[in-house]
Image (cartoon, rainbow, N blue to C red; front, side):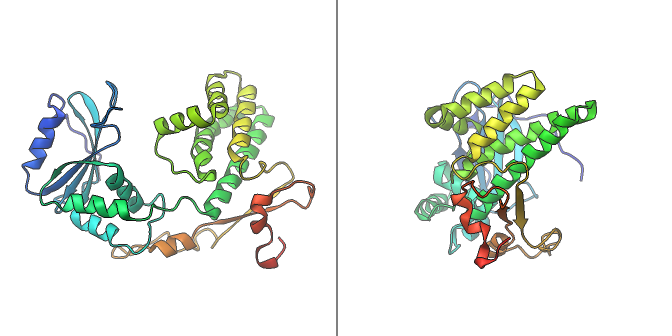
Length: 309
């Protein structure tokens, strides 16, 4: 499969005209505006976000990135059958699954076209469903373990001091701080909804973390940048437990690499929500060398079933 990119045919076309063109196509059953599109939060630099509900997919198209009226646009494609399957579930979809994302779009989106009224019914059904569960305990504690792992590796590379290790520190910081940003919300049981909502949340609820993040981005000195990163990680995990440290042992339990059966799935089969949950890793902390440290929030994981790790 080759990448597909062609000059936009709608760069000089207004959004209203694009919506009208789509509505004239009989395969289009409904259109929803997502994000800030069509709201008072829409700004001169905002993009267009649309959910296109089709009777069927004439081609295997999931997402179209294009330009409409000189604005960047994201068009997500789904089908009526997919909506029916998602809405017919007898339990809430796990956060992070595509099904949960679609439910979120139905819950927050604004209908601008509904050929037969079925999109309105789908939206009403979505808004009556229980919200998708936030991360469970296993996800939260695994986030805590991974953040501690990144800190340990970055400190190890920084101590080496050679040019390759310094470059490795910079490379690891690129994604490690991104994980801190995301797992800040995981650990607090809050759904991640994007960068701007995150900034708004920190502005209103945690200005200290936001200021630390700004200092991290602005810091030119690598050693100081790592110090600021460690401060961010400590702040991130604080509601759960202290950051695991030198001489601590953290264990992530699961089926073992390659043992969960997730590497090959028959084309006709999709893993159930229960099987996806059963494959989640479990994380435990051994702190026999530091008996004075309290990790009350992780206590259930220390000695599962009475077995001491």
